[in-house]
Length: 76
Image (cartoon, rainbow, N blue to C red; front, side, top):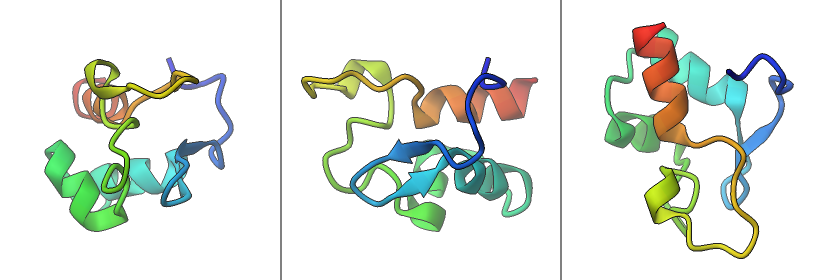
């Protein structure tokens, strides 16, 4: 699902958090929830549009969300 994105793709524009940083938080720092990702990376702590589709009220919709990355990494 995320193979088409570069590791430096910015998932959270407010905090400049990349796809790779979120994956590291999940794989190496054992983030199990969206809250864990926020605590470890600060992604989704400002406008919150990058957390999940339902919360994206921005004019430009995100291409991937923290929730999708979490589910993909944890569930394969």
